[in-house]
Image 1 (cartoon, helix red, strand yellow):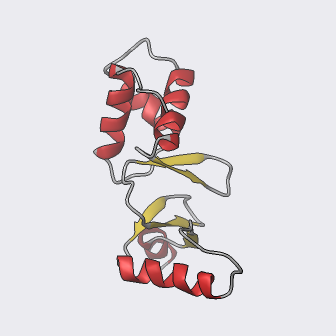
Image 2 (image 1 turned 180 degrees about the vertical axis):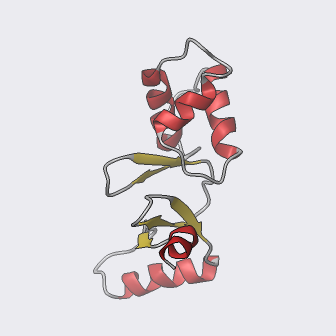
Length: 132
């Protein structure tokens, strides 16, 4: 890919993603970035989020409700989607645990597995508390 021209708006979007543990939708990112750039369009935010995901500077998480979420944490890790509230959380697993999943898949695949994506589903702690 050719060198990407610097964009203050893109830098602001990337900074917002890096500073949150939430996994925001494009609409949420848009609302936050608008505080700094009142004239930014939602389309610009979508394009920049997808570009950041394409170049590996963000992770795009496609959820079952059809809404994409974005994550500024780019090292390999998993996510859990709460079936009650829809919140997306990081699932902390060691690199050895992640590698073991690749190795297990590689052992039954007639080829070479190099990576994977996994999305877990469950109920978050807050929703479990509400159920009590």
